[in-house]
Amino acid sequence: MTVKNDYGSHVFITGASSGIGQACALLFAQHGFTVTGVSRRTEEKTERFDSGGSLTLRKLDVTDEKAVRAFVQSLPQVDIAILCAGMGVAGPAETTPSEMTRKQMEVNYFGTLNAAQPCLTRMREQKRGLLLVIGSIAGRVSIPMQSQYSASKYALEAFTDAVRMEMKPHGVRACIIEPGDTKTGFTAAREVQNENGLTERDQTVLQDSVAKMAADEQNGRSPLSVARAALALTKKKNPPARVPVGLEYKALMLMLRLMPDRGKEAILSSLYLPKR
Image (cartoon, rainbow, N blue to C red; front, side):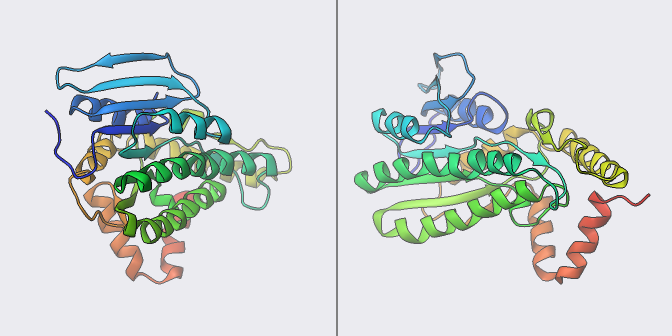
């Protein structure tokens, strides 16, 4: 069944071979959209669905700015862009190696920027479009021991807010989707700082913190819940600025917005900095 929307049927998705990106690609194709999904590692193929939709997968590294721009410009049309490509690093803010931090920003922020800019140009030209950026609850609430990940997602919040204001006169809408704990391959792929430069206590705190994150993620929501949130946004002429996924995270964001900073820090510290 095709979903009626004000944007169009051609969808471009990054990070489409796994996790949230894969869930979005399949769900949109099943609902009649013509989906082009890209990922660094994927089998290049095209699959057609009874709904009339299709999913074409192609290899593309979002950190290669020139290649991404050329690819987006080669697409017949870009009505909706869902930018999901991302990864995570974990380590103390004090000692996370600069190469890990640069990789974090290169993938999560610059990778999103590389894809967003040519998509926005295409959308401006056709005077309509919808940009959906996959952020994170950690982009509004910084998580101990993954400060660099939170920083990359905070950056996406700022970028998407600016896009909303700049592109609105051109008929282009933008929204950042904020998943919480989600069960995907992201957990196993997380890069964790090694023990070099860490005290024994810091090593233990980091290990415990990462174990807590991993357990929460693997007991978290299905990536399909995020895909459904994205699909629902295609029906909105004026989507909200940000959409936390799930009633529990909507309630959490409301509670934290009303809570003083010290209260937020106490809660997050108790969750992710276990005392020994």
